[in-house]
Length: 192
Image (cartoon, rainbow, N blue to C red):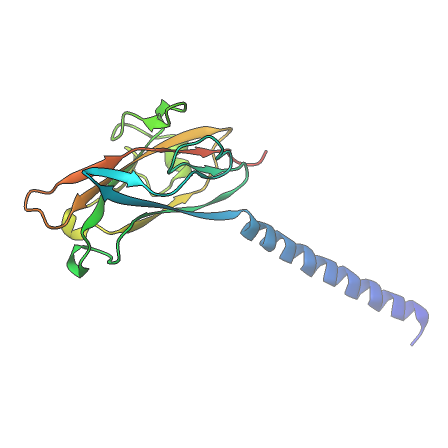
């Protein structure tokens, strides 16, 4: 085997390895851009309390339940009641029956407003499970659940706040008693 042939084979192998490595790097980058958070809630004295401290990007100084997704990151947020069972039929005391998003609210108080109104635009694109009114979950007590995963594509232009309102319903009541909370999330947006 002559040297020119050996060099050609070595260059071909090196190019192939570089191509494979760059493909793996892109896949690894995709996985490194994915983030997953959990927000745990519990009914206490007639209120829906958030047990989870602020998490993610720009969390310092934020209220419990806040989750921040840095620019270029995406992922999921699991909203979960502090329960040992999945639904009323399996023994849960409380279930999630409504989860709504709003792009309107106050970043200083981290409280939303105008839930259940037109939310089309960046919000429904960033949170694809939401309908045009920002509703992610709307269930009766018998079909409610103790956890719900929200997809956040964080594909908006620039920083945006999304406020989420969670309603939990007690399983044991004939006339359902509900408790509500409405903290905020923040998206850094897509990479330029």
